[in-house]
Length: 214
Image 1 (spheres, helix red, strand yellow):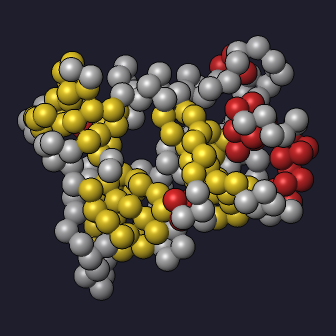
Image 2: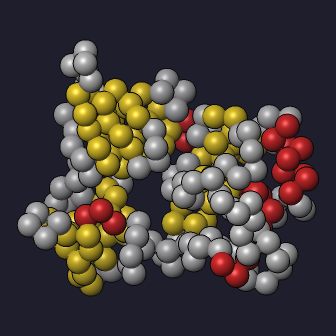
């Protein structure tokens, strides 16, 4: 894999100008690399070396975990803590389908919403859920694939289930409607789609491109 990505080839959901330094960074997973976030979006770091210094000093925390590399990616609803200044942020999706940030308080930084993409029963008969951000948790509550969960990042456990059902608020996380929010009007199980009402207009979207939110 290439170590750097040309700026003009950056993913469309990265909110970075196409002009600037020739190379940007190749992420180590889907999402927005912390280097791109701090340097290009937040503009709190001038270059890669400043980000590396902050990482070396353990000044950056993503969703409860200390950042160890500038390629570390923040995914949707991840939280970023800047330790020295006690600032807290969350990754969001704009109505244009691009990643953005919103400032939050310390309490909000301790939780995160994520989508269930898989479930399995372990040998001890405990239920494990697999989330879209790559994390796995044990969950005793009744839940299903495509539901969302609220995670307590300090206690590392599920504290709430948000079911994928009609009349629930949802965010489109992929496709041409990415970034749009609305209410689920109807779930079409056979076609694996849902009908969404947003700002007085209805449209259909694949359930895999949809995430229920609070």
